[in-house]
Amino acid sequence: MIVIASENGRVGIVEAMRVLRCGGSALDAVEAGIRLVEDNAEDETVGVGGIPNLLGEVQLDASIMDGRRRTCGAVGSVRGYAHPISIARRVMEELPHVFLVGEGAERFAAEIGAERRHLLTEKTANTWRRRMLEAMTEEELEHLAEDPNLRRWVSVTMDPRLAGGTVNFIAQDAKGNIACGVSTSGWAWKYPGRLGDSPVIGAGNYADNRYGAAACTGLGEMTIRAGTARSVVLYMQMGLDVEEACIRAMKDLQELQPGGGVDIIALDHRGRPAAVSNEKVGGTYVVMSDEMDTYEERPRILVPPLIGGA
Ligand code: ASP
Image 1 (cartoon, helix red, strand yellow):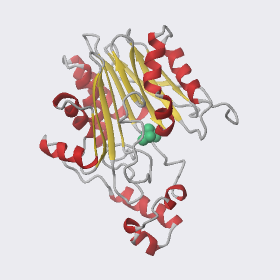
Image 2 (image 1 turned 45 degrees about the vertical axis):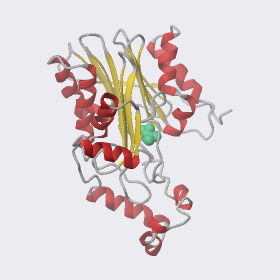
Image 3 (image 1 turned 180 degrees about the vertical axis):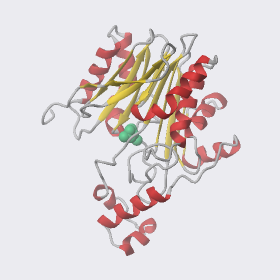
Image 4 (image 1 turned 30 degrees about the vertical axis):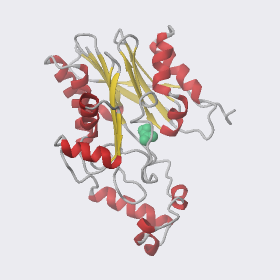
């Protein structure tokens, strides 16, 4: 049994392993681990305390995939609910659909009695306000919601230091089943309704018991274009080992312009992990197997973009 996660999964990985040790499934472990990250208001990239969109609203995205039969569920642009990962799981389990967004996702969340939560913290509200006022006047900010040209602010409020962050979890349980989950508040100051790769199956999340699973963080606009998580699993299906598969998928991104930071974690069906990053020197991810008392932080392999692009 093993659980791996992006570095911010530290707060949930021990609990995810506890769930596996108690006989829980890979899906249970992934959901339990991610819920703790979603609850962590210190993490400004996931769940409560996530950085809001351009209008100061926190919109959350999440997806979960079951490697047994490749069933999956995803939600996008959900407001006012603490645990999008659990809503995504219920979409997978209760609907004939895989993906709900916006009002439909919120309606479904209400129907299943999902926990409501105020997602904007005082800290993120202040950060948002300060950031907006660097780009616009008080008056423009006051009328932002009615601005017929909201798109003009997207570029000026881009902040590479705050552009993103997401949590990835992959678990393999005692039966050898693999599940993969991803949850995020998305790109800081995004245009309302923007979805990244986190809820897009194949881009930010993919799991197939036969070969393994992969999940991404970073600029979702990149991994959507390349179908990155699915590519990693497909490269494993074609015979590459997990590390090579990650490197190869990262190389597929090297020529994309405009480019951006992307990180991948992956696990093969034998329980071997790997992780890569295209820009984080010293980037890490976390790993915990059932033989370990706690998690280990391991380095990501750096696969830098081609200088100057194609
Ligand atoms: N992948 C996320 C998104 O595009 C953000 C991130 O991980 O930085 O929404």
